[in-house]
Length: 320
Image (cartoon, rainbow, N blue to C red; front, side, top):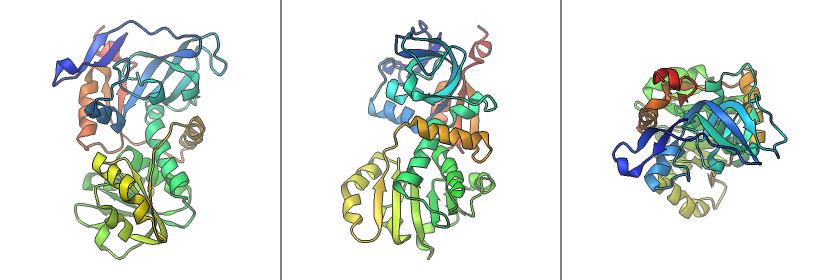
């Protein structure tokens, strides 16, 4: 099979296309022929931190068709179309095939394209858990989504509207129209306006890849409001861990989300996608051999929504 492998010795081009043996699933695994995989911040951030999967193949959010199953597999059979987040199984998505446990996979609806399904798992589940579990989102509450233009942000805007909130989204100029089309009630172009200096207050602030200080976020909270930090720079995460508890004294709370893969959440979200209530925003698609370009593009912060790698056509793209 073709796979994009992390090779530290090949610096600066550490992601290299190689031919590898196709994996063989053990008794408790399924072999998935990957048709699409999306890129996440977890991929390039793990590379920077030196956290490398055992198989040296990144890519968590996969969508494809099961080709073979181990003898202990009960949920799936060969031919089933599935998708899921393989991070807990060692990643492996930047490849034509991957062997994973059945517990991380969910059946893909037939009318949802593979590229669409691959854009869902990590970003959508993160947005859902931030809003519902940490943010206690309620109808008619005022929600501010900072960093609305990225993968998590585009899902957060739509899910907040699904829960009946009044949504204000903060994004760059190139994403304003897209965010408006997703149903945001108000859109703030951060190139023209500083949301922290206005007088508006919010019941829930979702800081996706937050770049402002914790005090700035807290300043725009209404009484009993909640700030949920989602991702961001390591320094921002550490500050939230160190000072979030102290800053939560009183009636305004600071929360740090550590999202977890959850197949029940995936089933919930993909049903919304199937019904047209939530739409993954895909900025660009790349062939497998251009995975390094896809990762670089996302890491530079240019993407409006998700970046997806189309794996199923890789042999045609490579003239193999």
